[in-house]
Structure formats: C-alpha cells, structure tokens
Image (tube, rainbow, N blue to C red; front, side, top):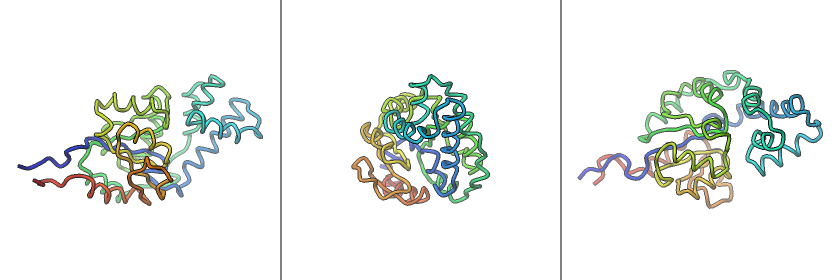
Length: 224
C-alpha cells in the first residue's frame, strides 16, 4: 500500500524577514532605524530613552509596535507604513535557489510574520517566490498580536484549521519557536546554532538548508 508524500505534516510556516533572505542584507537594520525615528519623531520619546524602551517592549510585548500601542495608543497602520517605507530591492534581489527549494517541498506553504501584508508582498515579489505561498498571515491578520505571543500562534492554527502537530515552523529567532513547539509544531531555526533551547528541533545555517532537513523529516513518496 502506498502512502502519501506526507503522512503527518500539512503546512510549513515560514517567517519572513531575515529568514527568507540573509541577515547581512541589511533590510531589518534599516527598519529598526525607522522604528527609532518613529518613536522620537512621531511619538515624542526622547532619543536617549528610545533604546531602553525598545528593549523593554521587545521583552515584554514582543515588538515595539505592541508596546507603543499599549503605552501610547498609537495607530498601528501609521506605524507600519512608516517603518516599512523601504524598498526591498535596495537590499536584495531575485533568489532562484530559494524558488527551487520551495518548489521541492511537498507541503502547503504559509508566511507567518510580524510585518504587514504590504511589506510581505514586496519582499516575496522581490525574491520572486510569492506564488509558493497560499497565505500570508501578517500582524494585521492576527489583530496585532505578534510572535512570540502564544495567542498569535493559536490564531494561526485556527485560521488554517489544523493542529500544531501538522505544522513545521521555520524562523530565525529562537524565542519565536518556543510557543510553536509548545503547540506541537516541529521547529527549524535559520541562521543559528540551536539557540540553547529545547524548543528547536533542527538548526540550519541558511534557509537553503531547510530542504535538506525536510528530505529526512518527511516520508518519501511510495514508501510502504
């Protein structure tokens, strides 16, 4: 009796920034600089306090956006438009190797990102891999709850209509994989050495190595 290509997994969830493209590209660094500018120019936080506040927000809320919403009541759309007012094409280009790797993965593919839809679309279009992804689950989709808030992950599973055990999650940040693992997902960290946490099942140097992990992880077609 032949089995399907995958018996257990249905979806693979990919983070976006610094997962699908290298950290060295510099796009995230440029966005972080714009976050600081928003905090000083739009919110009025003294420049000397910005670094401390960003660190506190990152630890307590997951993102600066959530912290600014909770403490200052900012408009998240205005924030996201300001922070993402950058052209990904200034930082990287088309990635045929990524396109090829995604084409070989026999699972339904989803983007799960703390960015907004507009930014995600532009990154995927620049890489020319948008056609691989059924859904872009962005911070607007999950009501501005962001990774690593467990509510964000629960919302994702509800949207997809699956259990955590049916998902593989790929992210470049160890703490973002902890709630995924708690919900039963299999986790793969990109750009790291394991992060010192048991929440990481596999660790790879680049996104291009994810395909190798999956070849060992997924049952082969025709296996009896």
